[in-house]
Image 1 (cartoon, chains in turn blue, cyan):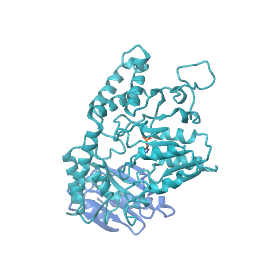
Image 2 (cartoon, chains in turn cyan, orange):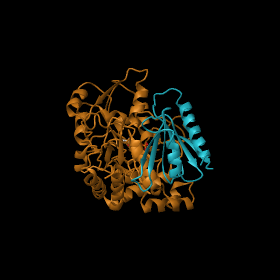
Image 3 (cartoon, rainbow over the protein chains, first blue to last red):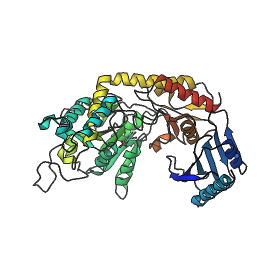
Image 4 (cartoon, helix red, strand yellow):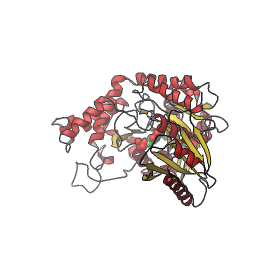
Length: 102
Length: 384
Ligand SMILES: Cc1ncc(COP(=O)(O)O)c(C=O)c1O
């Protein structure tokens, strides 16, 4: 099982209010990416040596990262949304539930 | 790592800066004069740095050059320490938040009026509006000399002449231009210049300063008062410069780095540094200009010798491009509004940059192959 070693909230200049960076204890594999992708709409840039992925979920959050790295991000899609922190929590829990099965 | 975010802070620092600081840390730090093992006050690093920087900006009275933690502190003092008479400040839409936020703060709950001069699509200010604005009495005319968004350089000599004609104080934010463009206080009729040490002056972060004219000093109060090492028995801050604005223990290591950073710029020459940075920017421009998915900010400024390559990519958010560059290619650039939020309604056309830009800024130490790696990465991301 892959576990989370750290989480960090990130503020960016454009004012997207909720970005959570999650560090895992091992690299993100293609298997994890496609498993995560089952719950949403997966964009997978496999033309890159280290492919970028971004998955958009109907619950108003995104998960993005790069294959082979140890960190990924859960991001609120609509910055205007109230209770953004709860949406991010949902995204984080979904990530944990997928990681449990790997 | 390929570092292309030098407008934020330059990295790496020149070897002489690194050596000077590491050597100084190994010696006794408490007394600045000992940093240079001189026993006279004229020989200490603070006096030497003050002289060197004053000379660098052609400031005749070196004590009118004050050390602070950087431009933000200098600009806060300028805007919040002033005794406003006409209660009107003219500034531009190209300003950084280190000017805008102090301005909004002094404006709040007061009758101070702010007038903003617009800029064109490349970031050059509108002289017709300027001429109208200066014809009504004002206290300050504040302008960002070099835009950290487009790289446009304002003609401060011409503006300084106009501002002086109307008897206002002429203020320059030289955060981006100090060390990158020649600045002559006398020629430009400048009353106050704010600079920061960690960008094109190649010092470390946490050091910078300002120049203040004798005239402006009369109506500009210090923001902090305290120990100066002189006139300790008096209850009020000494009126003499630089002590009036320099309360507290100084940032010796920062000042030391600034001394060597400025020496590096002088030795290398501003012209050579500018030329190199523009050559790096031209590599990106020539490699990417024909890709239809890429929109480039102010090609005119690049052609005039600019040192910023800013862009966005259709169908990608700026944040995703920056993320991919960092996470897949280990290339550091910056996205967003670059703390100059008003400018994005003016640059480009049809507001194509209204969600900010991706900014690529080389330094004198950036290599051709680093720029080529950046272009390769962008082409791979776009799928070319
Ligand atoms: C145009 C401009 N003004 C002011 C500043 C503030 O400089 P500092 O953060 O060093 O105080 C910056 C830094 O990014 C800048 O680019």
